[in-house]
Length: 528
Image (cartoon, rainbow, N blue to C red; front, side):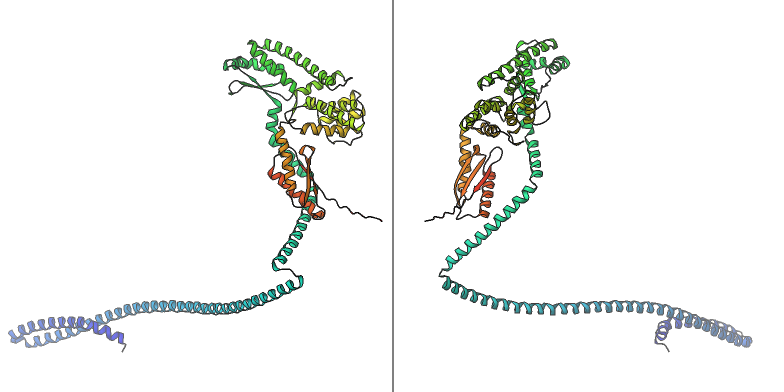
């Protein structure tokens, strides 16, 4: 028999016994009642016997029915137990499966860790062996270096410090040569792209200084005594200022700046007419469109007369005759134009006298030289009205007036735009540079000018291998003479580069400074 079934029967016996006992008790009670009744009626003995037999039969039937019901309950309980036991066994199997899988993973990790430990041990062993080899090699190298050092000291007769110094000097010389070659190559590459780069630099400079230059060259200010007068200058609904701008051809700016009205125009003569007219109107006090036109006409006539007088005075001062009336007018217009703070007419007169002095020293025609110098910038009086640079504009204008070829070439070529065809052109170019760069010529004091020259020469003289240096062309060039025995050609290039770099970093100067390094080797032979 199945042990599980036995356990179920053992659990169900008390219930079955109770049911059977109850049934038997009931049957017996009924039987007893019946028997007692039968006994009481002795005449009914046979009936009593029959009833007892029926009671026994009924009790058997009841007992069988109870047994069948007990077996059914037993089977149901057994099925429920087997189902629950099957679920428990399945769950145990799943747990065992997961535990088995986890054990496999742990075994794999242990194997991996053991492998890594073996590799680390092997690497540490190799590293230790390598360190021992390196230490042995360093010991050998130190012994070898000591031997070689002793051998070098014995052969060369130099101490260790002297040998080091000699070696460092040799290495430094090689490095300087390499650096000089690199600089020379960089300069060559820079020259190949110089045109494009120069355009970028020029455009950047124009952009950077356009505002300052415009402010200095195109704007004049007129003092206003009060805000009430400023309102009268503007007029009702701006009619006075519009009439003034129309009559003079300038822009008048009236802003919140106290006591000032700004007159703006590119034409310096027109701006001068507007400035004088506005000052006259403020003094007169009568400001209306009719009065504005009268004052502008009067001032225009005065300015034209002053222009002609200035041109004649310049021609007389330069002792030049035979100038056309239009040339005198343009020279007078130069009195109202400045370049870096230098009056262009005074600059032209200076150039004329400088050209004469140099021409006289060279045995050339001083009068013709003065004419070239005075007229060299005449195109600046018209360069805002015509296209092109002032040398070409002045050349075209003077060519129509039949100026001599020497004068025309000096006007057109004093900035190197065209080749020189006469000796007067380089004279004008030199005089132009001297006048522009002289102390005080362009907003620079004598002390600052001398200090700049001294600084240029000090920077050049501080370089190793330099014998002498000279700042020439008003500080626009530095001539450096180096010792040919100590400096080779490659090193000379490096010296020029180093001087130029220090000048850029340490000094402030207009334009550019050219650094020229001269290395002269003289070979002298004596025949006896």
